[in-house]
Image: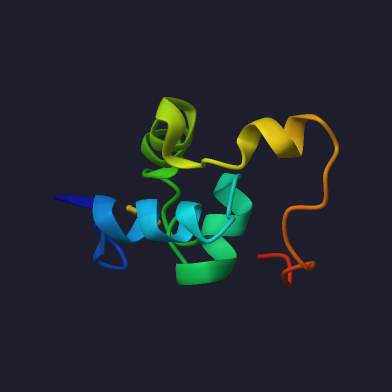
Amino acid sequence: MFVCSCFGVTEEQVRSHADAGACTPRQIASACKAGTDCGGCVRRIQALLGRGACPRRQLADQGAPVLAELPEAA
Ligand code: FES
């Protein structure tokens, strides 16, 4: 099922980016552009991340370094 129809990004793709350490919609956008066109999918991405798609969220919340800095999406 598509999460971002502008870029054809699926829920699976968002989950795999989250598994790789992307814990915020901005990091998802850096990985696959989802959310950088109409923005209509950002809430869906937030919901996916909020449902535990990011296994490292707890570490991130504790201040652990999760990722090397990704280039920020504009
Ligand atoms: S649906 Fe994702 S940017 Fe438009």
